[in-house]
Amino acid sequence: MDNILYSNKFRSSLFLTILLVILLLTVTGCTSTSDDTTKNNQNNSSDDLTDDNTDNENSNDQDSNSDTGGETTGTLAGSVDSSLLSNANCSSADNANAVYIFKGDTVVAIDQSGSNMDPIEIVQVSNQYTYSISLAAGIYTLAFTCQADSDQPDQASDPVTFTGVTNVAIQANETNTHDFTISNPSGGGLNATIQAMPANSWYEVPNTQLSQSPAEAKDPERKGIWRGNFKNANGAMAFSGGAFDSKRNRLLIWGGGHHDYYGNEIYAFNLTDFSWDRVTNPSPVTKSADICTDVLSDGNPNSRHTYYNLAYIPDPVDSFFSTPAGSTSCNSGGRDDRTWMFNFSGKQKWTDIAPTGKPVINWAPTASAYDPITNQIFSVSADVLYRYNISNNHWTRLPNSNGVTGDRGVVVDTKRHLLVVVGRGEVVVYDIGNESYQPQKWETTGGEFNTKGSGNIKGYRPGVNYDPVADRIVVWDGGAVHALNMETKEWSHLAVAPQARFDSGTYGRFRYSPIENAYVVVNSSKQNVLIFKLTEGGGKR
Image (spheres, one colour):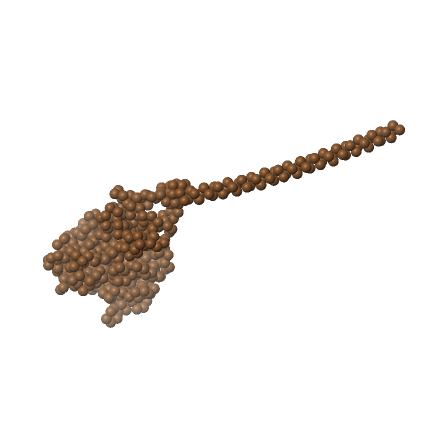
């Protein structure tokens, strides 16, 4: 009986225990489910809150971007070299000097024309030649002009030219500086269009006809300059050349003379931004004494055929140089035995430097080249070789030297220190490094350029350069470019230009830019400027 009772009690206890366990598990399961649900709800709520916050932050960012005073803006500031305001084209108005700002990395700068290419900001340059503006972070194109007062908002043909077109990156919360300097208005960097050219290719720069530029002399008050055969700056190309200003990356052109053109202004084509400048105004021809004379009444040299007589002398001289000779402006022609120099960094004017040992130049045109190794000018006449020493302002007739007839280009091969004369189907070399002044006529191979023809001889009045990157003498006289290997004495014939040469010759208007490692040629004022790229990449100074 006791055992039965014990057994029943045990069963009852076991039943109760099992029941309590089931109840406990049920309660625990509900609680766990509730907790998980709560947690999930909390997580969902947290995610929704995070999304809301993100939207709010994005909204704040958008507001900040639209506010020029927000955290995503930076400051652009800089100065303009006062020498850039001395150009003959610059206006004297208070609102003439300005920095134009364009959105993006385009290298094309235009005035206000009512199009989507208009500048987004125009910042006036202060009396202290400084400027400043707040801009949103990003990439911009800057361009300086000293003719902003001529800009009409809805006209595309305003006479506004730009200097130093370049790109800048504006960083948020920083002052970003760009200065427009006289030595390199773009403040450094290469012309992107030129650098993108493939090797052995030509590029005709659009809208670069001098006759379509406000730089061309057209002042009706200077009617005396129109009495020649040419009625525009095309006369500056007549039997005339140029030199390359390597400091400012521009081709300088000066010419005219005889009865072709009476204007004596200097022109410059800037490779940095593909623009024209008139460096000097033409002297007024107001007196009969200003005709058939060497020096005009204002002290400037008369216009003349400059042939190959021009050179650029770099710092510290920084001057445009003209050797004696040249047919001056006169119906019957004249000749100027003076040596002239135009200084860019000083008073910016022509000077008759009156050297000692003045060379005796016959009528035949001379050809001159600057030698950067000795800092001297070599000049080849029909009779003899001359050397001008810049340091003591003295011309020397070099001993035991013979000259060559005119209409040939001349350049210094700086690697071998040779004076190389090319033209009339010949290559003549002077070993100036060893002071051997007897001309050596080289026999070259490679086709048409080294052969003489009748009438217009191959290589008659060509443009001649030495390319230090390609190590070649590079010649152009219309048609194909010719390159002479100085080791093998063999000519290569390269890409053909899209223009024929100017009737009276190329002379020094085909020049090498050591900055761009490219060539620039100006045929006439009525044609676009041409660029030739022989090898890729930048150059060697």
